[in-house]
Length: 191
Figure 1 (cartoon, rainbow, N blue to C red):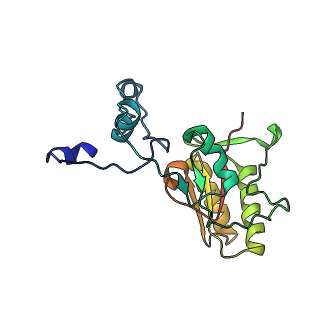
Figure 2: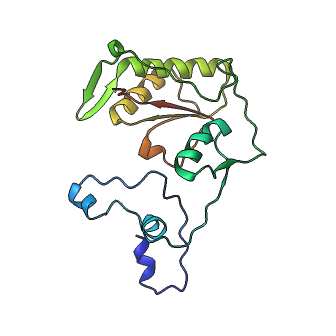
Figure 3: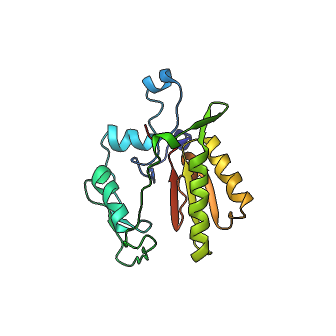
């Protein structure tokens, strides 16, 4: 799609985006071998080393959450805007994140077609949203998962409990570019 503009022989081209973000989904190995999973922006900025600018101040993540992608992908250059304030006392430890590991016995995987789900994890996500709503009915909640079956099961569970107000349940691809005051990630598989 980016090449369409080039048919008009532009004098300048400005591409806006992030080469470190979610790449295109390409299933075909033959297509990957020919680098069809590389965006035009990635080709120019990363492969051809064309001049590019990076916005180094972000306005979406808590500074503690920002630390990891900043170090991993941006050589520590990504910082959080000083004007942002966060209230992170839900777990009593003032951390902006928490992890819950499902035990191997709890990981009873189900299938819908080729997609996977874990009912125990679906129930747990519903419980988290219910608990959040008991103290906060206005924050937006994003629930992200890697499997369509898990997305559908979580959505159904939240609808049955009337917990869909200000909640968006989506796959990783579907949530790309969106945001929420609180984000829950359901991995389904932990291996």
